[in-house]
Length: 323
Image (cartoon, rainbow, N blue to C red; front, side, top):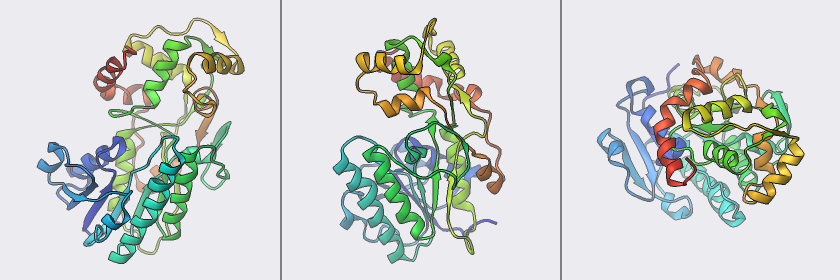
């Protein structure tokens, strides 16, 4: 059932995931022509304003600026997170910023709040096929710890939390760039590239967010949903596709995961042990439920899903002198 038509406030709408969600909301397939508002510190890009999006000037770091931001809003889509290692910044943006946003929504009578979090709240793996509710959260970084706190705020108000794992597509500055940087610095397989991971294209994630924005939540308490393609992908496949499309030589030798980590720590020290594990150890989650609940197909998977983002990746990686 569709939700009552009303304004949608997108928080973080100029970011990687947020811009894909705004684009989806402004297309006919995503609801089209509805009142889309984007909470942002800076002016919106021309394509958003020309398509009808309206900027709400505010900042999660300034709770006072959020006063009235949800007036006339039926649904808040919270897609903004700080993912760096500064604990103070994590708490300010992810935890206190979310609390202030939720308070603004309550004050405006807005009962629909959706938050895009991360499967990294589960912490260390390996994780193999667990459904929602089967793994205890055990975050290992300030970013994941504060995002778990944000989840609790949203869930306490009956909202919905989405937990994607690794997201790829235009605007991705972590997953594919990190894999490519790792291939350049450590051109060796870790355990043959046998690790499997849950992946989701940013446009497919945006379709899920937009579908929840359209859905009638009345009578439903919110909950947690994994949002990934249902089929996990072996990293050997990920690397093969990236090497094929981006002109990177594939690894020709192999190390144990432990030896691979020791080598990586020496030549790429900025990659944490947990981040290395995300790329070399099983981290995949049962993600069938959300697609069935929303009546959506999950998209073509990584090999085909990567292709639309290749021009962006080539430009971005060239700027980083990786390809």
